[in-house]
Length: 198
Image 1 (spheres, rainbow, N blue to C red):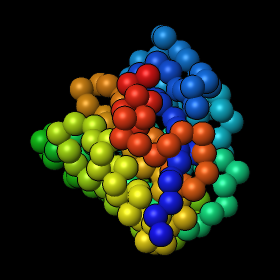
Image 2 (image 1 turned 180 degrees about the horizontal axis):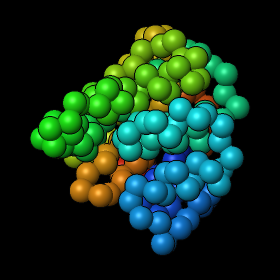
Image 3 (image 1 turned 180 degrees about the vertical axis):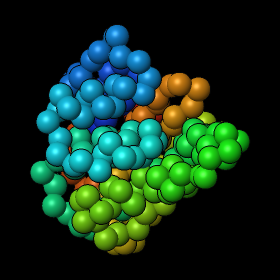
């Protein structure tokens, strides 16, 4: 039986601010890309030293997940992320090391797949459900709503962490939400679009 699913919480990260459930938790107008993620990590007193080894895309996904999964211990949480450019930001850095004549850096190469961020989140929060990363031309609220609903209604996951994590042209565009059976907002395409654009 299909249930009316809900958005339990959401997080929006841009170049200068982080908003969780409509409330600002970090703002720094002077931050230079991509330093906002490191500054926010420190100000929010997070404790995961591997964060500083991650590429910008993984940091964006990881930080969003930290804010949404804080206090949650549900290992049956799926991860469904998407963006426009895959891991292009890191791919370009990897190519630069090759072009400079240096031996390609393994620490950069490891992040030349966009789904590495989902793996970082799963390891950190001990999530054992499905995870996937999709590439679309633009933010696709309908797909995120449909995929989340299928995972929860088919009992493959109890909740789904999903959203959009884009790092492109020195810009950060992150929107992630946690969907489940309880929450303030209906898991509806129009509501997802509205929260993303807020």
